[in-house]
Length: 483
Image (spheres, rainbow, N blue to C red):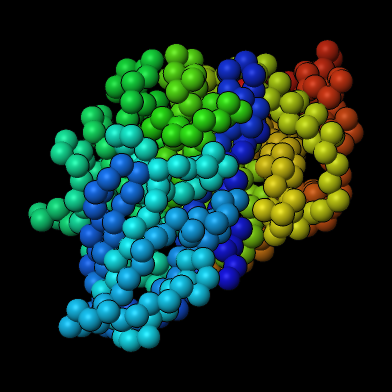
């Protein structure tokens, strides 16, 4: 079974620079539709999730039509073997009789008789650092529950209720009904934060509902995450011209597994951003740093989560997003122009140290088996040079941001090939068309030393700097860039 790389992002991201006191590789991931076919389609299932003991959840599911086969995801992004956490799986017939289940493989269960009810336990108490933030976990007095790995992929629509310990609550982008049940039409996108003492802030940003939920004690004030997220969301609305239709939720939670190499990890799934902060850096996490993280993660609520494109176009929704998020951080004054160039220079140094032989399209196709860094790093640098080309052609009046607005305003057919649609959109002139062909469709290596001098920039020891002598056109371009 293939899990499409287009829908997922590895936990590592590169563009956050040392002066922002964030590690060079920081966690990000998203899912916008797994594309996993149901073995046996069925109507809405009634599910109860209870937390009877620390680190475990019990799940019961009832079906309106009988089933004999259930499958759990065993691989999710770079997380392997996650179905092995499912224990004590049982199935029952309409009269309550044992349907005699046998386990055929990790996460694969088959019953001899038709079953309309199943029950099982999932062990979530010992999340592996390399599995985060992709999977469900439950540690101490909090946890993140993701239906994509808690429920069989055969369940397509869910009516769910939770039985939680005293003093606990559940928060999600899904609003419960009057009876406390959550009606979930796309379980693979559903994320719930459960725990005690969850601090919630809710309001609207230009009419878009936005909620932040914080677990744990941090150096920032309770309402700071919402305020900084609201600024980023407003900027993304201006960028795309597209208003998100539903509620977006940002969950901020302590990282539950020791991982000295990571200050934070994050995943954007559906309309939910899960940000796991390392408690060891509790005092270092400022609102400015939150804004830098949000500038990347929140853009994924739009790209690709609000698009309906198919195929592996990770180079765009990761690499181009990294550059666009860097632009957002600059425009919101979370970083300055010097930091902007320093970050791009650091990315270029990494690129030079890790030569590539693949086109960005090829790297996207094998992202989880070796094309990962180039999807991010080369994609980011290609976006940068592409932006320079647009600004030079237009005298600073047209930028990459205009392509995002076009992406959401143009009639892009549902299910269209993402690579074809976006490359067509980017190729607005002979120069940009030739550039995308060379550096996205083909495997031509980037040499910034040759590409950027015409724009008033220089490369010195892999670092970018403004040229000492600028003509009027170069000054105009660099001013449009934020110089």
